[in-house]
Picture 1 (cartoon, rainbow, N blue to C red):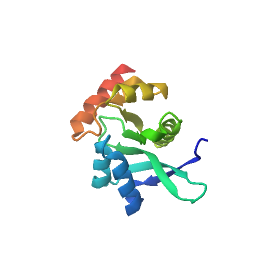
Picture 2: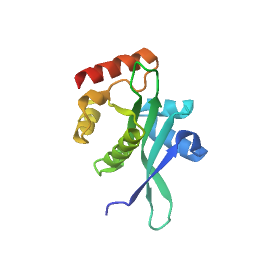
Picture 3: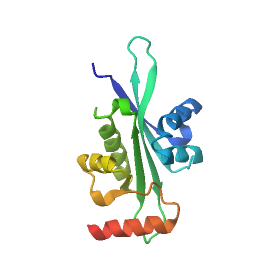
Length: 161
């Protein structure tokens, strides 16, 4: 029987200590930049958290999450959001990642950001393409550490349109 999944949205600053610990432990081995952002705790970040609820014990377990960090650098560039996703391997191929990505991209577009998705592996790249994301919007750099990394990527993306 397929578990019942619920997804909730929360600013990174508003995560509880327990949520932060669970997300860090869930993510640290495969996607350490997400754990880094959790630790850094920047103000311009939003998360979407997927959890399942045990019917018998009523306990909720976090199984996946997506992260959106945004930049509004200057007038030379468009406003972008950088999006990352992690799904516990036991819950992959059940549509959870797709739901998280869709919600994150909807939020990004609603707030007039150009979504840029982080996907450094072939599997991630294929997954995002299957979700309908333009390959030009998929980057292998998690979050730009310098403004110029962001500017070059966005310029390249805009020129591909």
